[in-house]
Amino acid sequence: KQWYQRRVRGVELGSLIDFCTIPPALFTIGYGRSWLGLRFVRALKLLTFGDDVAAVKLISSHKMLTLSRTLCQFVSFWLTAAGFYFVVATMSDSDSSLTFFDCLYFLLVTITTIGYGDIHPSS
Image (cartoon, rainbow, N blue to C red; front, side, top):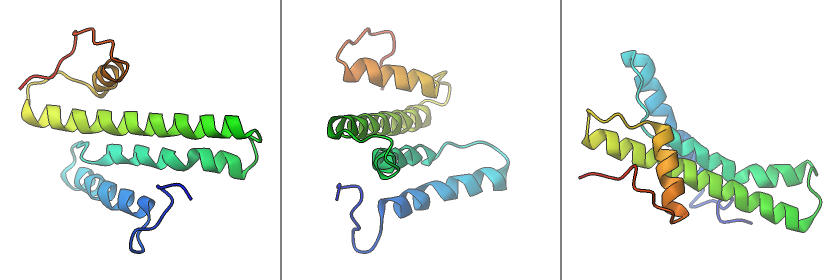
């Protein structure tokens, strides 16, 4: 089994993701305003997408299956890290015009070590 498919003391990764993402949804309904909270953690559910593709036999080649799992892990990490950065950046600066897509762009430029410098963290 992959590391994300294992149970830790009887709790699956999907259950932890639901535990972190359902309260912000209730907050949004209760207070009538949008709040990102930890909803970006739902991107971790993409970790199992490569295995789901293999289960329905859409990909039969071992190399393509490994590639799809690796791609799903990268996209999952990228979206989750961008959501975390967005939450932290907007909590520290309420006047920030930073969007989630700016965070995705910033992380892609940072991960690939291009570093244009047009978006940078401020303290």
